[in-house]
Image (tube, rainbow, N blue to C red):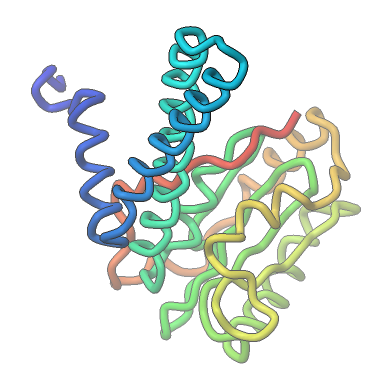
Length: 224
């Protein structure tokens, strides 16, 4: 059973994230500070103009805190993506951070070069996401799409390549791209597809290469 000491508190978590931001971008924390100060300064100027200085300072402090948190969160997201970039299984870590009625099955197919195919089931239908060079994963995606179509009859199946190559989706844009896919299914149909696909065995075991462990990628917008 985990003790209180084993779980980092909110302050400690913020310090850890701040350290990650500092390593990824030395100018990150100064940007957070300056954005908050600039917001407060604008509020003070407005307060002087309208002769409501005290009210503007109070409002400015709250706005400065909010703006600072927003900028801090954006920089933390970029830093986390930069850490995941290039690691085997990075796309799976990003996919598992999505909010909503999604089922993510990492590494349903793996080849000897450690190229991966992940499967996501949600309102769009079935989404296959590959990791690896386009010339190697294209055949893997085609094979998986054919295999899954035998079970998911009449269900839309999308195949996406995650990577930095031509025609591939960068890791940082993967969540957003999937969230924008058409909503082809309603919740009962999504659950039915999930049940059908549970019977599909994985083609190969997970690769022996490094996999992101404990990576916390900011979650995407929740689908309603």
